Amino acid sequence: SAVISQKPSRDICQRGTSLTIQCQVDSQVTMMFWYRQQPGQSLTLIATANQGSEATYESGFVIDKFPISRPNLTFSTLTVSNMSPEDSSIYLCSVMGVSVNTEAFFGQGTRLTVV
Amino acid sequence: DAKTTQPTSMDCAEGRAANLPCNHSTISGNEYVYWYRQIHSQGPQYIIHGLKNNETNEMASLIITEDRKSSTLILPHATLRDTAVYYCIVRVVRVQGAQKLVFGQGTRLTINP
Image (cartoon, rainbow over all chains, first blue to last red; front, side, top):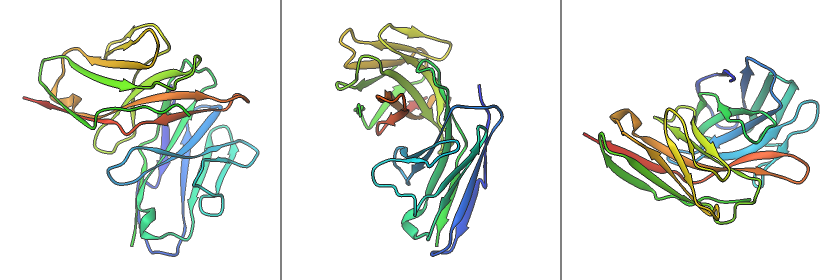
């Protein structure tokens, strides 16, 4: 199993500013992911955070808006840049092992409100 | 990517079995079906997963059709605490080995006293 800590748990930010969300895992993991959950919606994958290389972004998400770092196997950050009210969402970190027969684990999320 | 289709909402009486269906007709042969639930916008909680055989654990049972195009999650004795959004998910495996979970829209299950 893996325990994931996300910081901050929630924040209220001014439009035009940026927020960096941290994800810390209690063990080394192969795959780390960042999701967005807009109000009342399902989870949408933003990107896969790759250790030592650029993140792999899903369609509709770009590095300039959501820069991601992953300096080691237990830590990653997601930055939401130049925020607008449309960025108000819950952002979740997730980790998964290589074996397709093992579960993924999720953090408790960061609830972001942009005003 | 394989997509899943679920009913938007369902109701079930407390103490009865809750049966949640999911269609995943475009699933590939090596892709697992996973079920998670989310309560009050907390992080999703793992329930169960399977490839082609039926699976059971302490929380639920998973029935996968022989053609793998659909599955049913069964909560055998639903309690009020099972009220949540339930997600049927396909674990997509790409050519270079990259993987991801593809979430459907989820079923909002309400357990009634």
